[in-house]
Image (tube, rainbow, N blue to C red; front, side):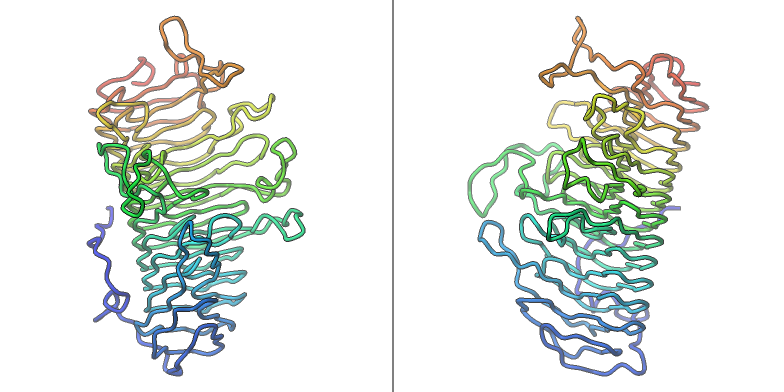
Length: 491
């Protein structure tokens, strides 16, 4: 059964762990007064607030130690977009250590709140991490809590609010570029866990907190000038939780409450260690794998994507043949994804036509399991229903997946939509037939999928839609749908 989230009210970290759930500090912890830039190598019980800091807050430089902030704050010097400020500092930095932890405090005003680099079995817990925003462009930071090139770390029981420009909590390999402009060797991360966090309003868009049905444009209070809906800080990603490869395997994202992210609530992106440096025709990703074996379970991911033009509750992302990498063997189970801008759950394809020989079947999430989820009331409808807003969307090329026993009601588009790739002309315009209907590329559709025991009612177009003629090699069985686009969807 899905875990009922606690109230959304943000409270100081000390109050979060008050009473019986507070953890005692280690018996050997040394009460210390720390200053900006301090480095610790022993168990430490903080006895003061630190900052505002113009550089790094605190560095954990030894394994097997605990930094207990004891309810205190680590405060940086916030970036102000458009002001020319360029602070790229970290609040609490785990520097190549293992089996250490930070707990029971607050971090704000840095380019990244807490960052783990090249470490294992570390823990970030019971922290209030908010308003950590990186400078525009050229920064590897931009997250509330980030885990870089590390394995078997745990991020749990934190409140992570209004961080950016990238995400609230992220698992990452990289960075991709070196100072001499060469390609960084592929790095790995495995077995990391993001558990029972509250990830709220990670959104640095100009027009944030747009609600379904709200008018556009909006007028930011800071400028008084109306801007179009979806306008955002340049370069921002605005994910709630981001599992971003390559070579990121066996991650666990479980029991989190994710809401009001500017883009996706939970994002799984295989990425590629050289994809952002070279022209796409030269990118090979040799030696890389995607995000393999990610478990996304019992999360509530709702009302995401309203800070920009896109956003799903859960997005399993695939990249094109020029990047030669896929997300695969992931499991999405027991989640609730309601009222998200673009849709609830998507098995997504990207760059399907970026090279002449790039077949659609080679550019999407494959061999994934999507089971026992509830995904309802998704899609942005500003008075007119659009194609946005499937409960579960399977983009062209999403093959060999199992989508079973999900409940999908009242979405702006389909309950379950299995898609083909639309044909475009030489000018990039979609091709339509004489009746104005889209023309699809033959053989491009998601295929060899199994869809069993799903329930869908009250969706705007179809409760179940398969754009492949005759459903191709997709296998639909025992579903309870009110409307379908062709008989084979009923099984």
